[in-house]
Image 1 (cartoon, rainbow, N blue to C red):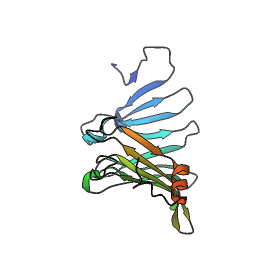
Image 2: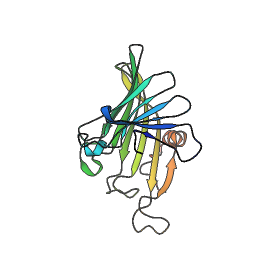
Image 3: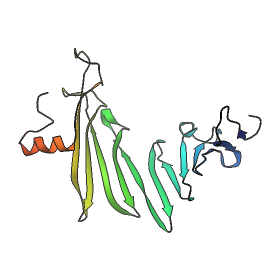
Image 4: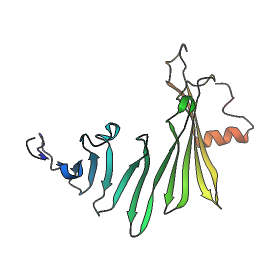
Length: 193
């Protein structure tokens, strides 16, 4: 495009514009929602170029993404009427799963509401390779502490398994099945297939 407004090829009324002064692209749909993305200006960190910046709904409420020094999303927060609500992200700092998501916490203002914790295989066990998601634990914030309300557990094929391929999902045990096994005295993480 020779201007900062792009022309669609097909029959759409959505728009895409380039806001050079703010170094961003703005996509707006017919519902009045808009998404902003970092442009490719040399002053923007290479890892952030083209990345998501914010979402504004049809009522003008903007939800903004903030990135940490490693250029991983740190928070996704909406401010409205003096209040804030959004998701805050934490990552594993080291080991075979460094940089993988460790938890996502939903907060309203500075109060915790709920979070999901993520555990991964480290490659030493028999049910998954390094980087495969092992467990997702949903927790509710009650009486100044997090209380587990559900666990999902996953198993994968490993290199050399005859029935599948490395990192291929083998089993999923949802929260109801997981809690039933625990109630029966079975530890899902060490039970046989």
